[in-house]
Image (cartoon, rainbow, N blue to C red):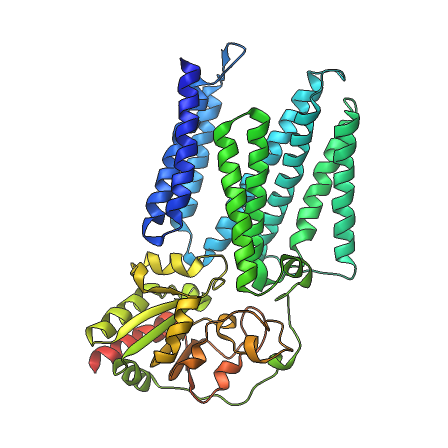
Length: 468
């Protein structure tokens, strides 16, 4: 009976994961989808703790189990409550790394158990293969995610040296060779090989992410997320645990698909992202040169242009997140709408520091989901837009992606804001964006610069609009 109840708990968990993921595809249902999946995980965890049996014995060690659950829950809750929207990408990367570490630790524990309780004749080669896969993939995900976390918060800089990609390939092949040797030869007395594979996988994970440029970090985060899912699925195979297997497959598949979509949004192959080091420092080419003179706009002029426009499109970027200006932006939107102005938001797939960063940012400010236009929709409407207000976005609106073959972002789909009648760009300075290249949009005749912190600039602009 207890076994049937445990199977039911796992079935509930698996179904809620699938339903929750489906709900995550729509911003309006995403929050509830997250809660549905969390409830399923809670049921699966409690079922495992109280109902799982092996050889007639239950888990026991409840004090240690619940102490760990309490500490992890408190730490996770505090981090989630205190994190700023600008720091959300690095927190996601760090949490993803913890998932990879868990998968790798499961492999370490099960390898020791398998080796110390078996003889050469009884060793399960299939289990050993799954253990090695979980170990390598989980270790790479953990080490890579920690490096990504450091790069996103600025504590780790891009680092590359001549021949690094060759060294990376050698490290990966050596790790796979050792894993294959362990699986084929079943070396009970050669644990040193196993721990060598652990170290090599960790080193490879570090070297794998270190040279990748900042502008490619959304793709890297998504890719590492898929690694963690695959590593978790290996644990599901190992324990014949259906809910763990389902969750890992869903995360792995979703992460892989998202990685492909991110690459498509940047018009780059995954190989180019991993080898090209795009955004990892200064770049050369026509777009990296100063494009001419720019003109500034006063707050009063900007307020007049926007107040008497028929349609305004707002393009949010990382600068908006840095300034925590999403709430003021929403107030400006409501004030303009009260004056009869149609206001919408144009969202680029890779704006910010992770996939969906801008959507989450605006959802926090209660911006209506219907107002958020994806890139294809927005590009269709720019020609009929009177004013585009760009808030801290840079590379995703750079026309060099269409017009300058020498630019490193050439071919990347962008928000075609230059099609609008007027463009107002809010930035702190003329400093290049995350990809490190100049933006020719800033020097076009229809573009005006509004310098300053996004929150302060929007507050002043809002006051001017209200006074008209």
